[in-house]
Length: 627
Image 1 (cartoon, rainbow, N blue to C red):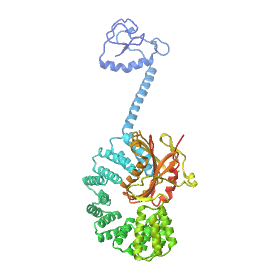
Image 2: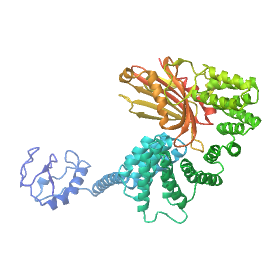
Image 3: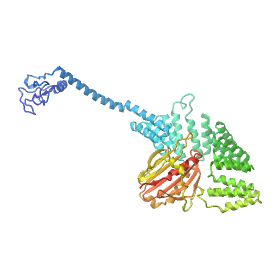
Image 4: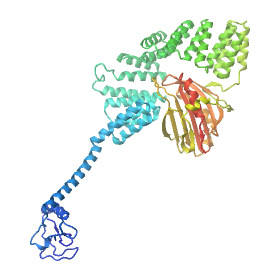
């Protein structure tokens, strides 16, 4: 039992005759109780304190009865209503404590699981809308709630891959692999990481991960999950075949293509990659059959037309190659390269009038294709139309590349061997040999021009002003006006001693997975980069390094320009993406100062680039440092 002094309400220890707080004397010693009795009286003590005031009086002003005024362990007499009120108060307190604990357990237990699922659904929805930054945040919340669960990392990795951040995707896939031993999930993680390695051009690592994915899928009890659902290994074999082809391991590429075809369902790429590997090994008959199979599966499989035309050209069957491209332009009427190739093979097969029509249509789709202008000039010269030939060659030289000029000269000399008396061809040859200095020239990836030539890019038309968003403030006081309606993502990359902040804006994602992209990087430098590299060297190296991700890369000569008071070197490029096989065009600006490395870039897939690049470049030309 618990005993209190009737004067000061102090708790009295057993055995005492004097209150240790106020000094009150008791007639007998306070009894010493067992722990059970003390526990039994603890609620009674609470009731006594609730029913009495600080001076020891019960409600109503009546003097409280003290424990020292009675013999033995006296209990204070508490009114019934006070006991009920105190009981209710204690019950409310207990329920509050229990409720708080339950809420905490709910947050950590099933309640946390519901929150985890909500972030999952929100992230999926954002990713489907192309709002990758928001999706990254939602998946990050999943990881924060369940850091030892693989699914959050897996979903964020998929989103990062779609966002064009393969290195970040590789990191999250790797983190997830350390958290799960479930074969199906591990197979998916290896598969996804392999795709990201492929986007970086690291095909050896991609092959290793595809092999691991295959092993994990085989660990499942039944690789074919249910009847009618494709075997997961089909995708592994198909993509590994492409990686082997990229590494020129053609026999292994063919082996994996055949395995993918055997598992099914068959995709055009399965036959297409197999055909390309067969063509590389000189197995032309098999390659032609497989290209044809791919086109029967999908008449819009463009690599099939290119492969068949290349095989026909190899056999000098130019009319057959022209026939292939006639089918190709029906499948892709907006493809300027196909129209230009059709014009070339029509010229080679003596169909000069048709060649002129095809070349001119190709130019209407993409005026920047210098090789088409060279071909058009050649066709006019062979036809004896001197004035038109000179105009076509002037256009080609104003916009063309050194490699294009070299090819144009070779074609003219071949034509002169067939028509040695043609004055028009001799005049055209002299014109091309003289060359031209108008505008930046495209050049195959290699040693760039030794020094910059000042030439500002075309000023953005006034009509673009209404298509740009309000000025966006970047790091360190820089600013730019991105295109209106583009989605912003922001990330930090440690590329210099103090890192750089990269801002990316992407346009709406199209059905084929492409999107226009604008990017501005503001990097801080401690002076080491400026001390060891010139701005021109940085620009040339950056443009040349793009060859690791593109084939058929063409680069313009580097030129100088001033944007927002800062001196930049800039250059244009175009090439075929190693992973997608699509043609891309873009522009790069670089500026090196004692304190900053500035990088501005824009690019998009062709033919969409014809419409989007002028807007993107107009946006980049608004870059400035705010006062």
